[in-house]
Image (cartoon, one colour):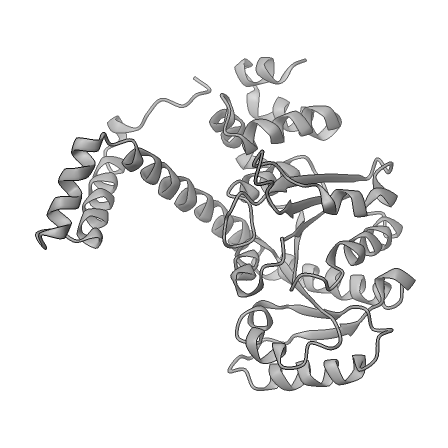
Amino acid sequence: MTLSNVERSENAQEKLAQLIRSDRNALAKTITIVENNLDGTSAVLSAIQCHLGRAHVVGVTGPPGVGKSTLIDACIAEFRKLGKSVAILAIDPSSHFSGGAILGDRVRMVEQSDDDGVFIRSVAARGHLGGLSATALNIIHLFDAANWDVIIVETVGAGQSEIEIAELADTTVVVESPGLGDEIQAIKAGLLEIADIIAVNKSDLPHADITVSELLHALSMRHSSKSVQVSKTCATERQGVQELVAEIVKHGVEVMQTNRAKCVSERSRKIVARVVGESVTRQFRKLNSKEADAFSELVQAGELNPDTIAESVIQNLISTLREPSNFPENEQN
């Protein structure tokens, strides 16, 4: 059964979910369709909506060079010991020549690549400042619909812009390493604010305990009641990794028990907001030079400002969405 046949069948939703659960190649091809926004993307995303909410989404972020990929590789092994299947979405820096992923993270996780209970996918950040691919949300939902127990999302590691991961993940793990010194002051208002768990990796290096103390102090200065666990790990020696995974699982259970439906709903809302925003941007850029010049002249003359134009576009869009007869036909029909 091919993906295209599934999309056209009467029971498209259930059959598509079954297909990507049972066929890794079908899942990989479906991700490619969604990542590149090819024909059928809308149908696929609509078909999986009723199969979401089971997976535990774990975001892993932190500055470059702290060993995120090596730590994830070690965590995968611990999750597998617990009998959990693991899907990894590694957001790689984009190639300046092809726009594709450089695949560095995938190379560093080769130890797990032959395990049927592990699925690794690298996608390109493509210049997205939040450290996440523009299609990351949709790929997370594909993994969720395909019945993977744990979905690990690794960001490219670009500093404070990484805070976007907290909007997608149930559990956010911020990875640090000893010797950051004054850099902690620069990041505590960003990465430390989004953390559910902080892993001080490379704890075999000098000053690991000092780094832990500095992080705990930085956390104590926040105006937040959220409890953040700080763990020491040495991924290369597999030290502290079992304890870290236990903390991740514990936090995930708490999320699932308290506000699981809300988390999935919020992620879906973010998908809608992002797609609408990107679509409006694309359409605006399609304006011919004469129309674009007209807008520019009005702005330069002070008769309009960009905010007014944006508000007008949004109001027109909202008015259209409130009229059911104006909805475009679904691609599945």
